[in-house]
Image 1 (tube, one colour):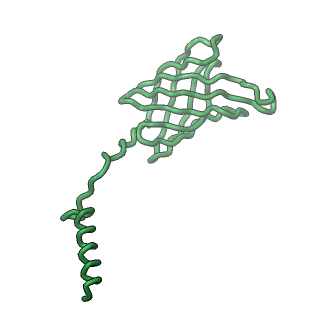
Image 2 (cartoon, helix red, strand yellow):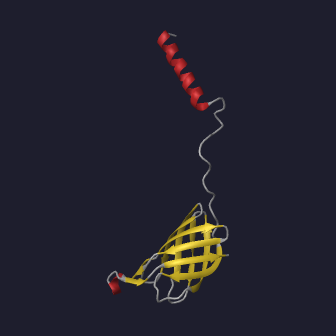
Image 3 (spheres, one colour):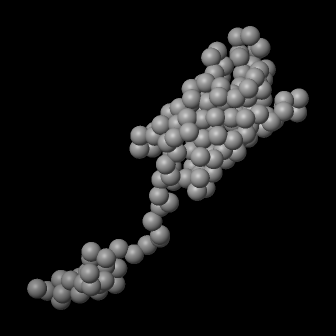
Length: 145
């Protein structure tokens, strides 16, 4: 081996030792990701609309979960959302939307903490009827199981 080849080999060995350590099966780095929360089941609590003319109302949500995919049904009074629900679970964060017949909007962002689920729900629109005016204001849900 030439002197240049020996120098390159020495640099590669030092480089590999400095970054890989003695045991390449050991991994160091940031802590692992937050484990995915399970939201399957029936949640109940209250829904507070952003519309000041609507009083807080009881709310029930029944959810099914298959991996990160969440589906379900929402039920509240006339001042709250009702319909089918699709979302994605990532860690303890739920992101999706409520589909109310003939409406658009209804984005959902939620956070699971133990047996509590707090959710923000976006406004609903009926573009054909109201020309993209808000049909039903969103709000916040506080649920538990």
